[in-house]
Structure formats: structure tokens, C-alpha cells
Length: 120
Image (cartoon, rainbow, N blue to C red; front, top):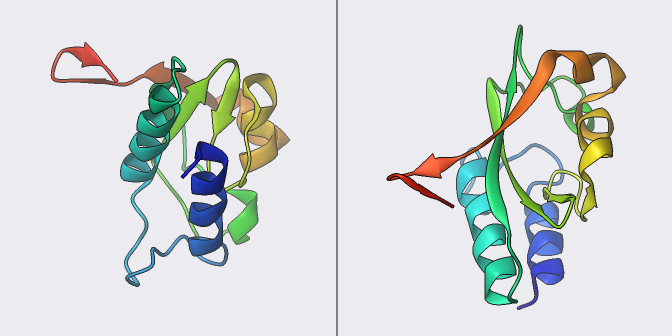
């Protein structure tokens, strides 16, 4: 399966309420890690990153305030963010505004996520 198909499939699963195919809250870490691994399998230099909020919660526009996060894992590759909440890759500089809205941009920061001492 190509990474574009993978992100489209994940987008359909979480379309309405960020619930996975088993009826549980979808795990953004697992989804982002799958996307990183898929892109790396295609020979690309994908990274796992985490978006944090300086104050309050991250509230994705798509879910009309019903879903709130303290942090959100994403896949970043070649200047694009791969996040199934959006459903397709978007430019990294446009991502925060597109997913969380203009007022959230000032309150967020993104870090490279490191697991067991190595970059993922």
C-alpha cells in the first residue's frame, strides 16, 4: 500500500470523531509512526514529530470542539505534514493553521520525537 493510500484509509476511519476501526480513541502516535515507516519504505526521510500547546488544549477544527488534545503526533517528510485528520500531505508552514485555526498558531510548537535515544 502506498503512503497516499494509507493516509486516505486512516482519514476515512477517523472522519467523524477520531475513533479507530475498533471503536476506541484513535492513537495519533501509532498512526504517525505507520506513516513514517511507510514513507521510509519508499526511500524518503520521514520523521515523527509532536505538536504541543503552550497553554490550553489543541482543538482540531474538523471535530467542532468535540476532540481536544494536550499533544498530537505527526509525520513530517520533505517539508510536508502527513496527518490523517487532514487526509493528505500539507505544507509544514500551513499545517497548524489548517488543522487548529489561526488563533492556535502562536500557542503551538513542534519537536522532533526521539524514542529509545534514536530519532524516529
